[in-house]
Amino acid sequence: MLIEQEDTRQELAKTDSITNDWMDVAVRMFDFASRALDKWENGTVEEKRIILHAIGLSLVLNNRKLEITPRSMFKEIQKVTALAAGSHNQLSVQREGFEPSKA
Image (cartoon, rainbow, N blue to C red; front, side, top):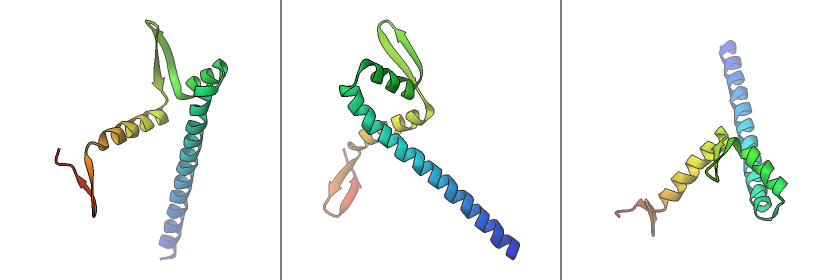
């Protein structure tokens, strides 16, 4: 019984550590995103270059168009953003809450 309790405590500690690490990464990413937007709009060419390299694994200029392969964490944000952008067409606000749209 004591061994099972200790195993459970260790698993909970591991889960807490993973959750805290994930939350730390998420907070830093949102902080980066908010500062990057301001720097992108008002910053120097060098600051914009730093932002591009932070976001992209691969930057390729193809027919005067910049193609960026985003880092994995930014791919996840891209997916969530696309889902959120499409979801405004899928939900309608009712008096008592949210309900799928009939349209």
